[in-house]
Image (cartoon, rainbow over the protein chains, first blue to last red):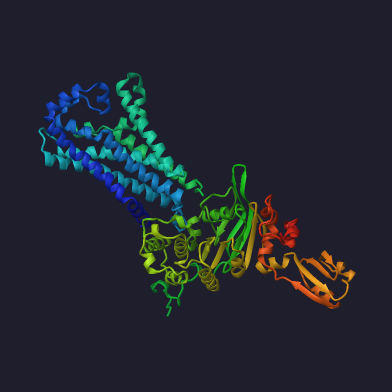
Amino acid sequence: MTVLRMTARLLRRGLAGLVALLLGVAVFELVNPFVADSLGGPQGLEGILRSLPPALQAFTKSQPEFIAVSGLAGYLSLGFTHPLYLTLASAALVGFGARTLAGEMERGTIQLALSRPISRFQVYAARVLGVVIVAVGLAIAGPVGMLLGMGLAQPEGTLEIRYFVPTALGTLLLFWAIGGLTLLGSAASSTTGRVVAWATAALVLFYFIDYFATLWAFLEPLEPLSIFAYYDPSQSLVNGALPAQHIITLGLIGLGGAAGGLLVFLHRDLPT
Amino acid sequence: MCKGDIWLLAPGNLGCYPPVMGNPGPPEIAVETTGLTKRYGEIAALTDLHLAVPAGSIYGFLGPNGAGKTTAIRLLMGFIRASSGSARIFGHDVWADGVAARRDLGFLVTPDAFYPDMTGAAQLDYLAHLSGKPPVLRDRLLETLELGKDALRRRLGSYSKGMRQKLALTAAFQHDPALLILDEPTDGLDPLIQRGFEELLRDLRERGRTIFMSSHDLAEVERTCERVAVVRGGRLVAEETVEGLKRLQRRTVEVTFVGEAPPELALVPRVTIVSREGRRVRLAFEGDLNPLLRFLAGHDVADLVLAPPRLEDVFMAFYGEDERGPGGARGAPAVEAQDAATEPDLVMRR
C-alpha cells in the first residue's frame, strides 16, 4: 500500500508533462493513417519510398520491398520506429526515471520517505512500478492513437486490428528496457541532469549502431549490442509476430537494469 | 478520556498521547553509537564516535560547521553507511535494521526537500501516512509554530523559508514519535516562536520522548538540553551534562581587596593569577569555587565580579583557536577562552 501511494505521488508530480508526452505519442500515431491516405495508399507509398536515398530509408527503417509486400500495415508500422515517436517515448521514460530517483536524491526529497519506517527496497520498488506504468501508458497510447486515426481517415488497404497486441507488447518491452537502464543510471547518479545526459547518449548510440549496421556491412556484428535490434514493430503489425528472442532479450535488459539499480541504491550513500 | 485505544482520538487532542514505542517501558538508551566512523577516501568526516543518548532526555549535539554533526546525523538516519563502527536506535542497527530503527522516529528534513507541487496540508497527510501513525500532535504544533490553516492550503512553492521550516518541524513531530532527530530545528524561526517551540520540547521530554538535536544557538541548547556532546574535527571532545560542562569551564574572577592583595592568593588550589593591578586581581579558576571563596572570606574584599558560567564560554574554549584563525577574533575576546583552548581535551574529555 505504501509503495502504491509513493508511486501515485511520483506520477502526480510530473503528471502534466507525462500526459503531454502521452498525447504527443497518440497524436503522432493518429496522424499516420491520414498521411497514408493522402499519399495514395500502398502503391503510392511504395513509389515514394523507392525514391528515397538508402541512407534515408535506413534512418526511417523503411524498405520499399517490404512496403510493397506489406501494404498499409507495413507503412503504418513505420510510425513505431520513427525517430520522433522514439524521442517522445524516451523523453517520458528517461525523464521519469531520472527525476524520481536521482532528482529526489539531488533535492533531498527522498529523505521524506527514508526517514520513515520505509525500506530502500520499497522506495526503489515505487520507482520501478512508476516506470512500468509509464511504459504501459506509452505502449498503449501509440496503438490507441493509430486506431483512432484509422477510424477517422479510413485509408485504403487492410490492417489486422489484433496485430496491435503484439505491436504494443514489443513496444512495451523496448520501453521497459529503456526504463530499466535509466533506473540503473538514476540509482548510480546524484543529479537529474547527469542521468538524462547519459541515457540520451546511450539511446542515440544504440539507435545509430542499429542505423549504420543497416548501411554498412562491417558494422553488422555490432547490431546485437543495440536494444533497437530487438525491436521490430513492422513484423508485429504486418504478421502479428513477436520473436521470443526479442521478448527475452528486452525483458532481461530491463530486468537487469532495474535489478542493478536496486543493488546500487541499497548500498550507496545518499548525497549531501 | 483515554480508554486505551489511543488511535481513536482526534488529531490535536492534547490530553491523550500514544505510548513511547510498543515495548513495555522505554529502553534506557535511545541512541547509541559505538566507534562510529565515516571516511570519504582519505578524509575522515567522523572518527570513532561513542555516544549513548538516554531515553527521555533532550540531548544537544554541538560543533561548528564541518565538525561532523551532520555526518553523524546522516549516519543515524541510515542515509549513509558507516566506514566502521555501528549506530543503534532503540537497540536496532540503523543500517541493517533501518526500518525497525525508524519505526518510532521523527526527523527534521531540510526545508527544500518537500514536494513543491503539494499543498502544506497534503504534504503533512502524505508524510503521516508514510510514518504509519496518525498526526496526533499536528494541531498543537501548528498553533505553537503559528502556521495557519490558510497557509496549509497553499502549495509549497509559495512558502517562505521560515514557513517551510515550520512545516518541516510539524512533519517531524506530528505523529508524536519516541525519538526526534533534529538538525538545527529553530533555524529560520523568530525568537517568540522559538521560545514556544522550546516549551514544546520540554513538554515532550516530560512525557518520555527523546530529542537529539544539533544547534548553533548555544543559548537555546543551554535552555533546553540536559546533556551535550561536543565534536571537533570529526571527533568527540566532550560529553557531559550542560551543568557539568559549565562547572568544568575555566572561569575568571575579578577581586578588589580593601588593602593589598594577599600573597597567599597564589597558593589557593586550582587558582591562577592572570593579572594584578594594585588592589585589583584577576584570577582564573577551574572546577569547585569553594576553596577560593573560603580564602576570600578570611580577607577584606571591596568587590568581587564573577560572571555566571555560560555554555558559550565552554564552546568558545573548544573552538577559540579555530574561530580566531588568521583573521583575528570573532566574538571570542574572553581570556578564559584563550586559556582553556590550549588544552581543551585534557580539561574536558572524560
